[in-house]
Image (cartoon, rainbow, N blue to C red; front, side):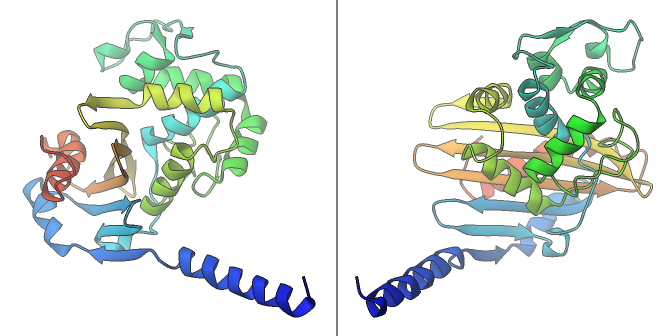
Length: 270
């Protein structure tokens, strides 16, 4: 190949790659506000349609705003726990420490799968302490999770410490998990994908995790995940906020808003 031909090939390849990268489109859906108003919360919703390379966003001002990940960090924490060998697999049991907590489902022994499904904080705090600060920080840096800040205590940094993540970063992390592009073994990623399943219906599989934290005197609620259909993958992140301590709809709103929007978009029927 001549120098001129080589140069032409490089330029052409660059144009094709650039065009592909820039082919993603964004649609803002202000009408989704009705679902947040109905639940007396504010917030944002982000969905990425892989097949169409399309972002659908409600309240784009929050797309790159940082929030505490709260229990959505259990996805990453599970990956780190398994990869480091602290947790062998989804059946690995950590005995209950006998401290009675408000959630009665937490007051017993748990394995990784049940701890994830019941969002058992003490299990993941024990896991994090066993991983240790040095390995934890290395893992967050390596997989580029949020702002990668582990300040505030090895068993609290994702709850009341410095860790923050944006709605867009949540989706980017999930895309990398689905595509097996995270710096973890295939075995580790398969185990975590399996414990994330919340709905396995005819035509689609949904993997997700909720979260509930406090930031700047506001309740912060999350529901993040992805849906695999026969021919597409949809990633979503719902982040809600509320300053009222007596909003009895807050917990359910994290998931209900997602399902309402997914029905609106005709991605799911239920």
